[in-house]
Length: 95
Image (cartoon, rainbow, N blue to C red; front, side, top):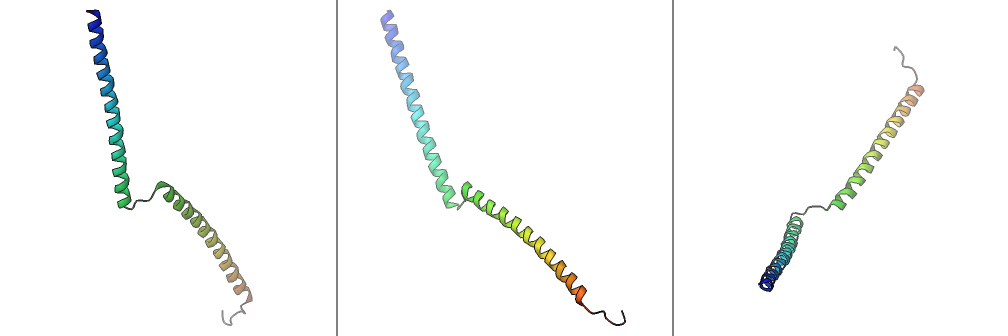
């Protein structure tokens, strides 16, 4: 009776192991399918990848800081020109 019981338990254990392996394989296949479908949908939606977004963001930050630097330079030059024009203008009569 002991051998029959062990054989029965062995068979049940083997079935459980096979079922677990099949479930794992099914899960992996489903994940792969869902990943492929998601990637296809994102490509159709023309969504940018994270790396591309970060590269453009970095470029925009650099451009913004350069624009701010140049705006300050222009303001300083305009002030110098205004000061030079005020210093070289002859005084107007009656004022």
